[in-house]
Length: 230
Image 1 (spheres, rainbow, N blue to C red):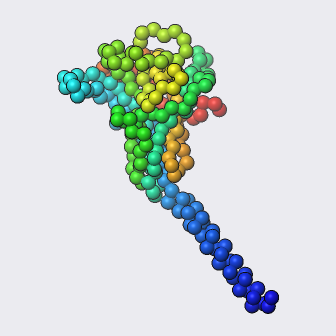
Image 2: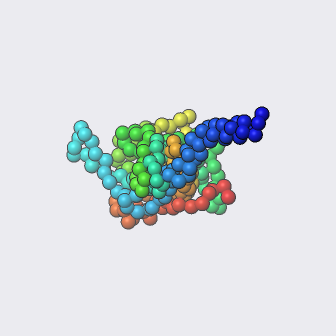
Image 3: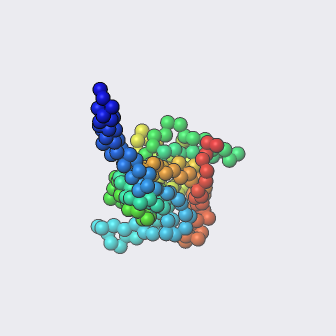
């Protein structure tokens, strides 16, 4: 082969290489510069955590008080975060010495975004949404509507007010509510096109119902902390 033939062959190979890998490089740049960027945080005050009321379509007069606790999920990236879902990945119990112990064989479960059971949520850039963690209903509402569905953590527990986690399903009969005590929650928000974002919450719950937010938020204190296994 002559020198010009080698040049032509090399040029053809280079152009073929460029044609093959440019789409991958372009997609990589797009993901790096324009990818969604999820951030998850918790605030122990309204509007994230607040007092509201249960209603009923069949009984408009029903207004039972309930406290809801929610995560603030924000997309700080430059493109839409698609098909987001929040999972409760781990449940921890603290002993009397303040040491956390992870409940074994706890299967990750989806947290309910809304009462309609929405499975996935798209989040636009520079947009925040609230995602349910759990709620505490009045004792009357718990006795009337929720008591039959309680699955407590292991042990003997008195008939007290419970923090009901907002789960879409309850697999294998594992715990779905918290009686008085100290707990840790590991929650991750996943998206189809961005890395997951995790948050770690410590829950101190007395089991005592109060009628006002100011008083109730002293009976239950939820704070954002670091990992429990460090």
